[in-house]
Image (cartoon, rainbow, N blue to C red; front, side):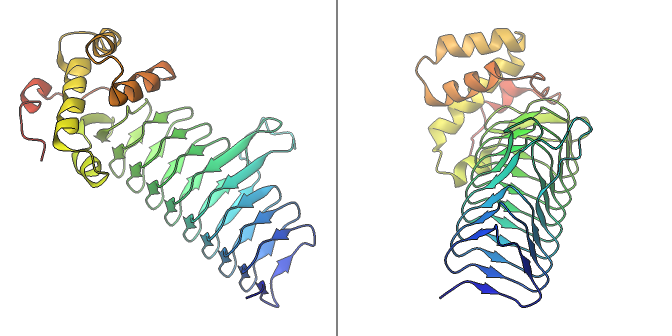
Length: 273
């Protein structure tokens, strides 16, 4: 099957389209773009200059991929958007290019970006993340792998969200959310480990219990967060999950989101299933 371009679509001759690409009615594909094999652009969607889409993506009506960044520091330098394979962007999603020469806004493989989501300049989203309706990620936000974000949430610039997290809907995120946790609210608070999400990703009961104990040490052992992290490093040398938490902490720019006022020591004794 060859490339299918609707007669009303506008595709610049400088665009590079892979095999079996479908470009729907009234779409716009600008120059210096690349669209991977099997990707579908539904009617009225737009792929702007210096945007790259992977294989088998679906871009829904009125989504704009690669628009110029909404940042006063942008001076027309060449920057990019790179979308991975099998990414779905629903209606009215906007993904802006980066600021800073050579900068890139990226979305990893297998992500599901729901209606009305905005990904600002220099955002990085890992693989297989789900971001629900009307959520806004400000500039330089970093999201790990396998993250679920509830609808209508707002993320402050430079915040970091660890892998395997879940952030509840209508949350205001102003500090970093460490890996494997469940957080929600205004102000945002860490409630527990992301028990259901970890179970769905095949983390067994023993591993989930271990992660919860690590966060009891970090958040509810009477130590500061910094000292709690040092204690986790001491108690769990060469442990994969501890390593994920500790490496995240080393790169934290805005500090860990506080825990809710809850007795983690008590919860650590509960059955994690």
